[in-house]
Length: 342
Image 1 (spheres, rainbow, N blue to C red):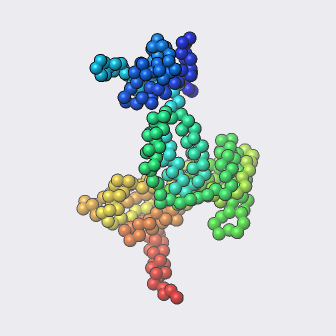
Image 2 (cartoon, rainbow, N blue to C red; image 1 turned 45 degrees about the vertical axis):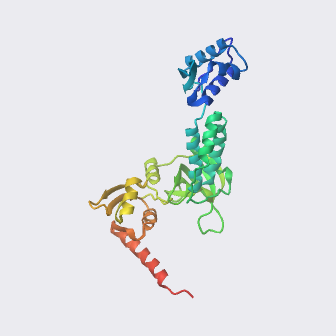
Image 3 (tube, one colour; image 1 turned 90 degrees about the vertical axis):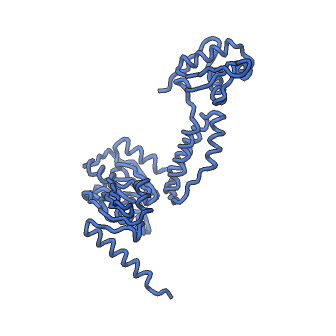
Protein backbone atom coordinates (compact mmCIF):
# COMPACT_ATOMS: atom_id res chain seq x y z
CA UNK A 1 0.00 0.00 0.00
CA UNK A 2 1.45 3.39 -1.05
CA UNK A 3 1.73 5.93 1.80
CA UNK A 4 -0.32 9.14 1.56
CA UNK A 5 1.35 12.51 1.08
CA UNK A 6 1.15 14.65 4.23
CA UNK A 7 1.09 18.41 3.66
CA UNK A 8 0.60 21.63 5.67
CA UNK A 9 -0.77 25.11 5.08
CA UNK A 10 2.31 26.36 3.22
CA UNK A 11 3.25 23.33 1.15
CA UNK A 12 0.63 21.40 -0.82
CA UNK A 13 1.05 17.96 -2.44
CA UNK A 14 1.98 19.35 -5.85
CA UNK A 15 4.72 21.57 -4.43
CA UNK A 16 6.04 18.68 -2.37
CA UNK A 17 6.24 16.48 -5.47
CA UNK A 18 8.02 19.24 -7.39
CA UNK A 19 10.54 19.74 -4.56
CA UNK A 20 11.27 16.02 -4.61
CA UNK A 21 11.69 16.08 -8.41
CA UNK A 22 14.11 19.04 -8.20
CA UNK A 23 16.19 17.27 -5.55
CA UNK A 24 16.33 14.13 -7.66
CA UNK A 25 17.18 15.91 -10.89
CA UNK A 26 20.04 17.71 -9.15
CA UNK A 27 21.79 14.37 -8.73
CA UNK A 28 25.09 14.15 -6.83
CA UNK A 29 25.81 17.85 -7.34
CA UNK A 30 22.90 18.78 -5.13
CA UNK A 31 20.82 21.93 -5.21
CA UNK A 32 21.00 25.09 -3.10
CA UNK A 33 18.16 26.64 -1.15
CA UNK A 34 18.24 29.67 -3.44
CA UNK A 35 17.93 27.46 -6.51
CA UNK A 36 14.97 25.68 -4.96
CA UNK A 37 13.17 28.95 -4.17
CA UNK A 38 13.55 30.09 -7.79
CA UNK A 39 12.59 26.77 -9.39
CA UNK A 40 9.55 26.48 -7.16
CA UNK A 41 8.23 29.73 -8.58
CA UNK A 42 9.83 32.30 -6.27
CA UNK A 43 8.62 30.89 -2.95
CA UNK A 44 10.18 31.96 0.32
CA UNK A 45 13.10 30.16 1.96
CA UNK A 46 10.68 29.32 4.78
CA UNK A 47 8.55 27.37 2.30
CA UNK A 48 11.62 25.47 1.10
CA UNK A 49 12.55 24.62 4.71
CA UNK A 50 9.04 23.33 5.39
CA UNK A 51 9.03 21.27 2.18
CA UNK A 52 12.40 19.68 3.09
CA UNK A 53 11.13 19.00 6.61
CA UNK A 54 7.91 17.40 5.36
CA UNK A 55 9.84 15.13 2.99
CA UNK A 56 12.16 14.00 5.79
CA UNK A 57 9.24 13.44 8.16
CA UNK A 58 7.76 11.08 5.56
CA UNK A 59 10.86 8.93 5.15
CA UNK A 60 13.14 10.88 2.79
CA UNK A 61 16.86 11.02 3.46
CA UNK A 62 18.29 14.40 2.44
CA UNK A 63 21.99 15.13 2.93
CA UNK A 64 23.25 18.64 3.67
CA UNK A 65 26.76 19.81 2.76
CA UNK A 66 28.46 23.16 2.50
CA UNK A 67 30.59 23.84 -0.56
CA UNK A 68 32.45 26.70 -2.19
CA UNK A 69 33.84 29.97 -0.91
CA UNK A 70 31.89 31.44 0.67
CA UNK A 71 30.32 28.11 1.65
CA UNK A 72 26.80 27.51 0.40
CA UNK A 73 24.41 24.87 1.73
CA UNK A 74 23.56 22.11 -0.79
CA UNK A 75 20.79 19.52 -0.50
CA UNK A 76 21.26 16.01 -1.93
CA UNK A 77 18.56 13.35 -2.11
CA UNK A 78 19.63 9.99 -0.70
CA UNK A 79 16.21 8.33 -0.54
CA UNK A 80 12.68 9.37 -1.41
CA UNK A 81 9.73 9.45 1.03
CA UNK A 82 7.40 6.50 1.58
CA UNK A 83 4.93 7.69 -1.04
CA UNK A 84 7.58 8.18 -3.71
CA UNK A 85 6.56 6.50 -7.01
CA UNK A 86 9.84 7.25 -8.73
CA UNK A 87 11.30 4.58 -11.01
CA UNK A 88 15.10 4.64 -11.12
CA UNK A 89 17.05 4.35 -14.35
CA UNK A 90 18.39 0.99 -13.13
CA UNK A 91 14.88 -0.37 -12.58
CA UNK A 92 13.71 1.01 -15.91
CA UNK A 93 16.72 -0.52 -17.66
CA UNK A 94 15.96 -3.88 -16.05
CA UNK A 95 12.43 -3.67 -17.42
CA UNK A 96 13.74 -2.85 -20.90
CA UNK A 97 16.11 -5.82 -20.76
CA UNK A 98 13.25 -8.08 -19.67
CA UNK A 99 11.16 -6.92 -22.61
CA UNK A 100 13.95 -7.42 -25.14
CA UNK A 101 15.00 -10.78 -23.73
CA UNK A 102 11.52 -12.25 -23.57
CA UNK A 103 10.72 -11.02 -27.06
CA UNK A 104 13.93 -12.57 -28.41
CA UNK A 105 13.33 -15.83 -26.59
CA UNK A 106 10.20 -16.35 -28.55
CA UNK A 107 7.07 -14.69 -27.23
CA UNK A 108 5.88 -11.40 -28.65
CA UNK A 109 2.86 -11.66 -26.35
CA UNK A 110 5.10 -10.98 -23.33
CA UNK A 111 6.67 -8.05 -25.15
CA UNK A 112 3.26 -6.49 -25.69
CA UNK A 113 2.37 -6.76 -21.99
CA UNK A 114 5.74 -5.50 -20.78
CA UNK A 115 5.68 -2.52 -23.13
CA UNK A 116 2.43 -1.44 -21.45
CA UNK A 117 4.22 -1.61 -18.10
CA UNK A 118 7.21 0.22 -19.56
CA UNK A 119 5.06 3.19 -20.58
CA UNK A 120 3.72 3.40 -17.02
CA UNK A 121 7.23 3.21 -15.58
CA UNK A 122 8.50 5.94 -17.90
CA UNK A 123 5.90 8.35 -16.53
CA UNK A 124 7.45 7.96 -13.07
CA UNK A 125 11.06 8.71 -13.98
CA UNK A 126 12.90 11.91 -13.18
CA UNK A 127 14.26 13.97 -16.06
CA UNK A 128 17.81 13.01 -15.08
CA UNK A 129 17.07 9.29 -14.79
CA UNK A 130 15.16 9.29 -18.08
CA UNK A 131 18.14 10.82 -19.89
CA UNK A 132 20.47 8.26 -18.31
CA UNK A 133 18.16 5.38 -19.23
CA UNK A 134 17.82 6.53 -22.84
CA UNK A 135 21.61 6.72 -23.18
CA UNK A 136 22.06 3.23 -21.75
CA UNK A 137 19.18 1.74 -23.72
CA UNK A 138 20.82 2.74 -27.01
CA UNK A 139 23.78 0.54 -26.12
CA UNK A 140 21.73 -2.60 -25.49
CA UNK A 141 21.71 -5.35 -28.11
CA UNK A 142 19.75 -8.57 -27.62
CA UNK A 143 19.70 -11.02 -30.49
CA UNK A 144 19.87 -14.67 -31.41
CA UNK A 145 16.33 -15.57 -30.46
CA UNK A 146 13.18 -16.20 -32.43
CA UNK A 147 9.80 -14.61 -32.97
CA UNK A 148 6.73 -16.43 -31.77
CA UNK A 149 3.75 -14.33 -32.90
CA UNK A 150 0.43 -14.92 -31.17
CA UNK A 151 -2.22 -15.10 -33.89
CA UNK A 152 -5.08 -14.49 -31.43
CA UNK A 153 -3.79 -11.77 -29.05
CA UNK A 154 -6.67 -12.02 -26.55
CA UNK A 155 -5.95 -15.63 -25.49
CA UNK A 156 -4.10 -14.63 -22.34
CA UNK A 157 -6.93 -12.96 -20.44
CA UNK A 158 -9.32 -15.96 -20.38
CA UNK A 159 -6.40 -18.27 -19.54
CA UNK A 160 -5.44 -16.13 -16.55
CA UNK A 161 -9.07 -15.95 -15.45
CA UNK A 162 -9.42 -19.73 -15.63
CA UNK A 163 -6.22 -20.17 -13.60
CA UNK A 164 -7.43 -17.69 -10.99
CA UNK A 165 -10.94 -19.10 -10.66
CA UNK A 166 -9.94 -22.78 -11.02
CA UNK A 167 -12.03 -23.31 -14.12
CA UNK A 168 -11.63 -25.48 -17.16
CA UNK A 169 -10.95 -24.22 -20.67
CA UNK A 170 -12.32 -24.99 -24.08
CA UNK A 171 -9.61 -24.29 -26.64
CA UNK A 172 -9.09 -24.79 -30.35
CA UNK A 173 -5.53 -26.05 -30.76
CA UNK A 174 -3.68 -26.59 -34.01
CA UNK A 175 -0.99 -29.22 -33.47
CA UNK A 176 2.20 -29.18 -35.53
CA UNK A 177 1.47 -30.50 -39.01
CA UNK A 178 -2.30 -30.44 -38.53
CA UNK A 179 -4.36 -28.78 -41.26
CA UNK A 180 -7.17 -27.64 -38.97
CA UNK A 181 -7.43 -26.91 -35.23
CA UNK A 182 -8.94 -29.47 -32.88
CA UNK A 183 -11.19 -28.58 -29.92
CA UNK A 184 -9.93 -29.60 -26.48
CA UNK A 185 -11.44 -29.46 -22.99
CA UNK A 186 -8.60 -29.04 -20.52
CA UNK A 187 -7.80 -27.88 -17.01
CA UNK A 188 -5.04 -25.21 -16.98
CA UNK A 189 -2.23 -25.54 -14.45
CA UNK A 190 0.60 -23.14 -15.33
CA UNK A 191 2.10 -20.91 -17.99
CA UNK A 192 5.66 -21.96 -18.80
CA UNK A 193 8.30 -20.15 -20.80
CA UNK A 194 11.05 -22.21 -22.34
CA UNK A 195 14.24 -20.63 -23.65
CA UNK A 196 15.60 -23.82 -25.25
CA UNK A 197 12.73 -24.07 -27.72
CA UNK A 198 11.86 -20.39 -27.71
CA UNK A 199 8.25 -19.87 -26.79
CA UNK A 200 5.52 -19.86 -24.19
CA UNK A 201 3.34 -22.83 -23.31
CA UNK A 202 0.24 -23.60 -21.29
CA UNK A 203 0.60 -26.71 -19.17
CA UNK A 204 -2.80 -28.38 -18.80
CA UNK A 205 -4.39 -31.55 -17.53
CA UNK A 206 -6.12 -33.41 -20.35
CA UNK A 207 -9.03 -35.37 -18.80
CA UNK A 208 -9.58 -37.34 -22.01
CA UNK A 209 -6.01 -38.65 -22.19
CA UNK A 210 -5.55 -38.58 -18.41
CA UNK A 211 -2.17 -36.89 -18.52
CA UNK A 212 -0.48 -33.47 -18.57
CA UNK A 213 0.18 -31.90 -21.96
CA UNK A 214 1.89 -28.75 -23.16
CA UNK A 215 0.00 -26.42 -25.51
CA UNK A 216 2.09 -23.83 -27.32
CA UNK A 217 0.38 -20.46 -26.91
CA UNK A 218 0.78 -19.36 -30.51
CA UNK A 219 -1.15 -22.46 -31.67
CA UNK A 220 -4.18 -21.74 -29.49
CA UNK A 221 -7.08 -20.16 -31.30
CA UNK A 222 -10.50 -19.82 -29.71
CA UNK A 223 -10.48 -19.83 -25.90
CA UNK A 224 -13.55 -20.11 -23.69
CA UNK A 225 -13.61 -20.30 -19.91
CA UNK A 226 -15.59 -23.32 -18.73
CA UNK A 227 -17.04 -24.55 -15.47
CA UNK A 228 -15.27 -25.20 -12.18
CA UNK A 229 -12.53 -27.78 -12.59
CA UNK A 230 -9.56 -28.90 -10.56
CA UNK A 231 -6.40 -30.80 -11.40
CA UNK A 232 -6.76 -34.31 -9.91
CA UNK A 233 -3.04 -34.72 -9.15
CA UNK A 234 -1.27 -31.40 -8.42
CA UNK A 235 1.99 -33.16 -7.53
CA UNK A 236 2.06 -34.80 -10.96
CA UNK A 237 1.46 -31.47 -12.68
CA UNK A 238 4.14 -29.75 -10.64
CA UNK A 239 6.59 -32.48 -11.63
CA UNK A 240 5.63 -32.05 -15.28
CA UNK A 241 6.28 -28.31 -15.02
CA UNK A 242 9.56 -28.64 -13.18
CA UNK A 243 11.18 -31.23 -15.44
CA UNK A 244 10.05 -29.96 -18.85
CA UNK A 245 12.81 -29.07 -21.32
CA UNK A 246 12.21 -27.41 -24.65
CA UNK A 247 8.45 -27.68 -24.21
CA UNK A 248 8.67 -31.47 -23.89
CA UNK A 249 7.15 -32.95 -20.76
CA UNK A 250 5.58 -36.20 -19.65
CA UNK A 251 3.61 -37.79 -16.84
CA UNK A 252 6.46 -40.24 -16.32
CA UNK A 253 8.89 -40.08 -13.41
CA UNK A 254 12.05 -38.10 -14.18
CA UNK A 255 15.14 -39.96 -15.33
CA UNK A 256 18.73 -38.82 -14.80
CA UNK A 257 20.98 -38.10 -17.75
CA UNK A 258 24.75 -38.45 -17.37
CA UNK A 259 27.05 -37.26 -20.15
CA UNK A 260 30.67 -36.43 -20.75
CA UNK A 261 31.40 -33.06 -22.32
CA UNK A 262 34.78 -32.58 -23.99
CA UNK A 263 36.52 -29.28 -24.65
CA UNK A 264 37.98 -26.62 -22.37
CA UNK A 265 35.75 -23.93 -23.91
CA UNK A 266 32.57 -25.87 -23.05
CA UNK A 267 33.85 -26.60 -19.55
CA UNK A 268 34.60 -22.94 -18.93
CA UNK A 269 31.26 -21.86 -20.38
CA UNK A 270 29.31 -24.21 -18.10
CA UNK A 271 31.44 -23.21 -15.14
CA UNK A 272 30.64 -19.54 -15.69
CA UNK A 273 27.01 -20.02 -16.76
CA UNK A 274 25.55 -23.40 -15.80
CA UNK A 275 22.51 -24.24 -17.94
CA UNK A 276 19.16 -23.95 -16.18
CA UNK A 277 18.31 -27.62 -16.62
CA UNK A 278 16.42 -29.52 -13.93
CA UNK A 279 18.79 -30.63 -11.15
CA UNK A 280 21.85 -29.79 -13.25
CA UNK A 281 25.28 -30.49 -11.77
CA UNK A 282 28.77 -30.74 -13.23
CA UNK A 283 32.06 -32.29 -12.17
CA UNK A 284 35.10 -30.90 -13.94
CA UNK A 285 38.10 -33.14 -14.65
CA UNK A 286 41.40 -32.21 -13.00
CA UNK A 287 42.93 -31.13 -16.29
CA UNK A 288 39.95 -28.87 -17.04
CA UNK A 289 39.53 -30.39 -20.50
CA UNK A 290 36.27 -32.26 -19.85
CA UNK A 291 33.43 -32.57 -17.39
CA UNK A 292 30.72 -34.98 -16.34
CA UNK A 293 27.31 -33.33 -16.39
CA UNK A 294 24.04 -34.55 -14.91
CA UNK A 295 20.46 -33.37 -15.20
CA UNK A 296 16.92 -34.77 -15.11
CA UNK A 297 14.05 -34.85 -17.57
CA UNK A 298 10.72 -36.60 -18.02
CA UNK A 299 10.68 -36.72 -21.83
CA UNK A 300 13.49 -38.06 -24.06
CA UNK A 301 12.97 -35.36 -26.69
CA UNK A 302 13.58 -32.66 -24.09
CA UNK A 303 16.88 -34.23 -23.06
CA UNK A 304 18.05 -34.97 -26.60
CA UNK A 305 17.14 -31.48 -27.82
CA UNK A 306 19.65 -29.99 -25.43
CA UNK A 307 22.34 -32.67 -25.86
CA UNK A 308 22.40 -32.55 -29.66
CA UNK A 309 23.30 -28.87 -29.73
CA UNK A 310 26.70 -29.85 -28.29
CA UNK A 311 27.47 -31.98 -31.34
CA UNK A 312 30.59 -34.10 -31.10
CA UNK A 313 31.51 -32.55 -27.73
CA UNK A 314 28.89 -34.59 -25.85
CA UNK A 315 28.72 -38.32 -25.17
CA UNK A 316 25.75 -39.74 -23.28
CA UNK A 317 26.83 -42.25 -20.62
CA UNK A 318 23.47 -42.99 -19.01
CA UNK A 319 20.74 -44.09 -19.42
CA UNK A 320 21.66 -46.74 -21.98
CA UNK A 321 18.44 -46.33 -23.96
CA UNK A 322 19.05 -42.59 -24.41
CA UNK A 323 22.66 -43.22 -25.43
CA UNK A 324 21.40 -45.56 -28.17
CA UNK A 325 18.72 -43.08 -29.27
CA UNK A 326 21.24 -40.23 -29.59
CA UNK A 327 23.67 -42.51 -31.46
CA UNK A 328 20.92 -43.55 -33.90
CA UNK A 329 19.93 -39.95 -34.56
CA UNK A 330 23.52 -38.90 -35.16
CA UNK A 331 24.01 -41.85 -37.52
CA UNK A 332 20.97 -40.74 -39.52
CA UNK A 333 22.43 -37.25 -39.69
CA UNK A 334 25.73 -38.65 -41.00
CA UNK A 335 23.91 -40.68 -43.63
CA UNK A 336 22.08 -37.57 -44.79
CA UNK A 337 25.41 -35.82 -45.37
CA UNK A 338 26.88 -38.82 -47.18
CA UNK A 339 24.04 -39.07 -49.66
CA UNK A 340 24.84 -37.58 -53.01
CA UNK A 341 22.72 -34.63 -54.02
CA UNK A 342 21.56 -34.36 -57.59
